Amino acid sequence: MAENESQPDSPLAVSVEKLRHELDRWLDFAVMQGERAIGAIRPKGSEARWKPAVDVVELDEEILVVADLPGIEPSSVDVSLAGNLLTISGDKPATESEAGQTVHTAERLHGSFSCSLPMPVAVNPDSVSAETSNGVLRIRLGKAERVKSHKIQINTGEGSAS
Image (cartoon, rainbow, N blue to C red):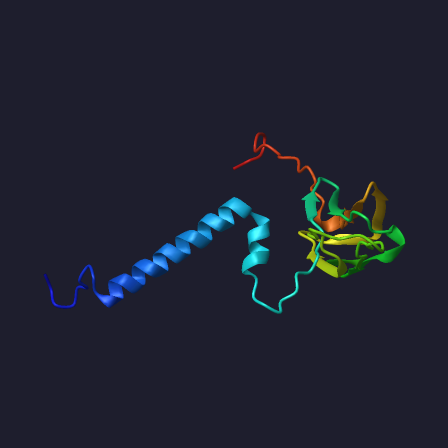
C-alpha cells in the first residue's frame, strides 16, 4: 500500500465517513420532506419570500403569461411593460388568526412580490390585455409585426434561362 493512501481506521477516513453519513442523512430527509426540507435547512435569519408560479407560453400571434395569485385582490396587483420586460408585482396578505386560535402549522408564505419576465420575442405594447379568474392572472401580449411568422412562397426555377 502506498504511503499517502489513508488507512481504513485513520482519522481522515473516519472523518470522511462521518461526513458522508451526515450528507446521506440530509439527502434522505430532503427526499422524504420535499419542499418542507428546504425550510429546515435554510440559513438562520433568511426569510422565505413568496413568489407566484408563472408560465410564459409563445403562441403563433401572441405571448400568454399565466400567473397563480391565490387570495390576492386584482386591485392590489400591478402589471407593467417596459420595452420587452413584463413586471407583475403586488402584495399577498398574511392570514389573520383570531383570538383564541393556536396555529400549529403555518406554511403559506405572504408578503410583497415582484416578478420581472423578459419576453421571448418583441411584443406590441398597444396589444396587451390582462384578466383574472379564480386567482389566476392571464396576460396576453400581441407579438410585434416584425416577429410574426409569414408564409413565404417558394418559386421554382422552371422556365428561367440558365
